[in-house]
Image (cartoon, rainbow, N blue to C red; front, side, top):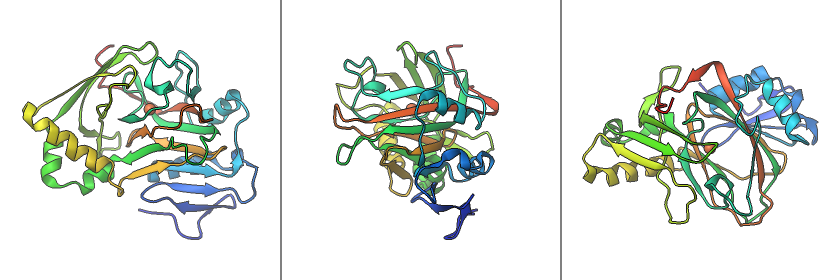
Length: 284
Ligand SMILES: [Fe+2]
């Protein structure tokens, strides 16, 4: 049920729907601290609408402040690098994460013991107009709801096996393409095969369950649905934006951006309560 109306507010700040899914909260006064917004209400909105944009609030001057804020949302998933991933182009990237090229659709924590419920993104510096770098989100519950029955039947037969060898992201997992959200509704878990020879640190991917000759149709129909404008939201970053995304339901990726543009995002993973164990993991 959609609880957002034209006049919805939260702590005096206007709440409006995003097309095709998600909601945004605009600060009534520029520079209002984001901590003015009650996290319990924001969490409800993030769960119901799957994506939340907080715009016009004061951002976080450093990683410590972002970490302190994120801890209000729940238990932070710690990585070898700490709580905050600094998503910025490296001079000599060893992984596509730190490259300026596109990143295909995937879900986060796929190689971790526990799956993060929320990703909290903070835009420390926008890439700038015309430089690309939108983060792409696709609402997989809606993808399944709207799917051609024959396509969905095909997707439900397929299982994906994934393996990465990079240091912080190494791991292996096996998951049906169509699986179940902790709340019981169907969702999609899929790591879209990357296109292009210059994709850094390519994962090993294998898709089974249908004859090999059916795999091109599987990928084509699934990718068409994931990127269908009815299900895809591509976020154009403004400096100071805070975006909270439902990693249980959405898949996400990144559009390419101009190399050496000032794009700098920070990301924190927040676990559910209780944390969701990653039953797809095979490297444990
Ligand atoms: Fe990701």
